[in-house]
Length: 430
Ligand code: HAM
Image 1 (cartoon, rainbow, N blue to C red):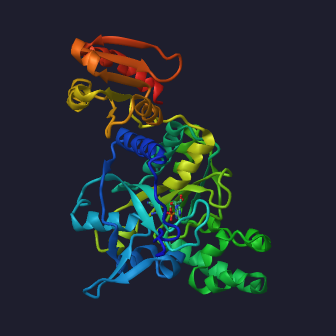
Image 2 (image 1 turned 45 degrees about the horizontal axis):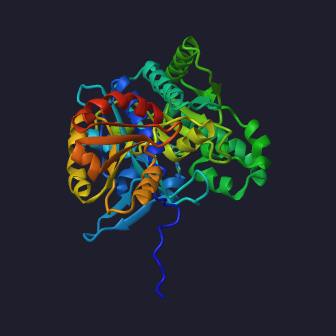
Image 3 (image 1 turned 180 degrees about the horizontal axis):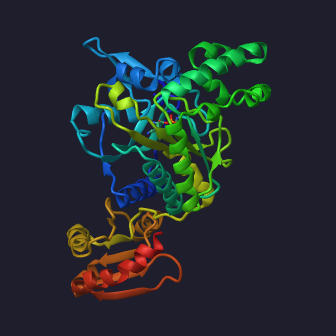
C-alpha cells in the first residue's frame, strides 16, 4: 500500500470549520484599517534573499537560522518571506510611493520561518501588518497603538498588556552596546551558550533572554534608557503623553529590544499570559533608517504586525461570537418535476434576495436524507418543494431549529417573504 503524502511540519491547513473565525478576523481588520484611512498593498510571497539579509540583519535568528531560502532555476537566491515589512519597503521604493507623500498601508498573508513548531509557533503562519511612511512624530506611533487597541475591542479580546520601549538612534545604541558588552564580559561565566555567541554578534538580544539563570545579570546591566539621545528621549516622552491622555495602559519594558535589526526609537509589543510561551500577539516599532538603507530617500517609518494564529487563539479564549458563514436556507426537493425546477428557482431566489445564503439539495435522496443534510448544513430554514406544491404554485417554509413551525405560501411571494425573514436569519447566524 502506498503511503499518503502529508502536509509539511509546521504548515497547517485551515479547514472549512476553521474558516469562519479567519473570515471574521480578516473582515474586522480590514474594517478597522480602513476606518483609520489605511490602504491595502498586496505583495509577493517570494523576494530576493538579499532584501531580508539587508533589512532584518545578517546576525538575527531569522536570517541566520529560519529562512526558507533556495536557488531558482536561474540560480538566483530567493526566500519565502519571513515577514512583510522588508517587502513593503521594497515595493514602496520601487514604485515611487514615498516621493513627498505620506503612505499608510496594510497587508495580510502567510509568512515562513523555519522555527521549532509548537502551539502558537508555526513554520507557515499569517500576519496582518500595518506600515506608515513619511511621519516622524510620536503621534503616528500612538495612532498605531490605538488602532491595535481598537482591534482587540472589536474582536472582544482582553488580557493584553502593552509594553513599550525606546531603542534610541543607531549612534546612541552603538555607545550603549560598547558599555553593555564591557559589562557582560565581566560576568561571561554566568552567560548561557546562546548569549556568549551573541556577545559579539547581537549583544542587545541578550537582554531579551528568558533564561531564569541569567535574569540577575540582565537586571544589573546598564540601561539603554540612560544612553538615549535627546531626540529619542523627547519622542518617547511624547508617545507616553499621548498614551496617557487616551487612558491607554502600558508598561515600559527596558528589556524589549525586538529580534529584527531595523528598529530605532519606539518599539512595542502586546503580550498576553493566555497563550503560554508564545504570548506576543502583536509587535512593531519605528524603523526610520530602513528606507534609505534599502536605497530610497530618507523616510521616517513605523509599523507593526499581528500574528493571526495567536489572535485566533485569543478569540477562542474570549469566546467571542462571530458569524458561522453557513447557509441560511436549504432547499429540499421531492419528486421529478420539483427536482427539475428546483435549481432554477434557487437561482431566482438568490437574485431576488441579496445577502441570502441558499444551499440547494443536489444528488437527490429521500425526503428524510435531504432533511438530514439540511440539518447538517447549519441552515435555520428549509424550503420544501414537492411535485404537489409545484402543481398548486406553492412552496413550504419550515424552521429547522428552535420551536420549529411551518408555513406554505404562493411561490411568487417567496422573494418577499425571504426578504422579510432575512434579518432574523442573519441574527440567528451570529
Ligand atoms: P515579528 O515580531 O517578527 O515582527 O512578528 C510579529 C508577530 O508575528 C509576532 O508578534 C507573532 O504574533 C507573529 N509570529 C511571528 N513568528 C511566528 C511564528 N513562527 N508562528 C506564529 N506567529 C508568529 C515582524 O514580523 C515585523 N515585520 C513587524 C513590524 C511591522 N514592524 C514594523 N512593521
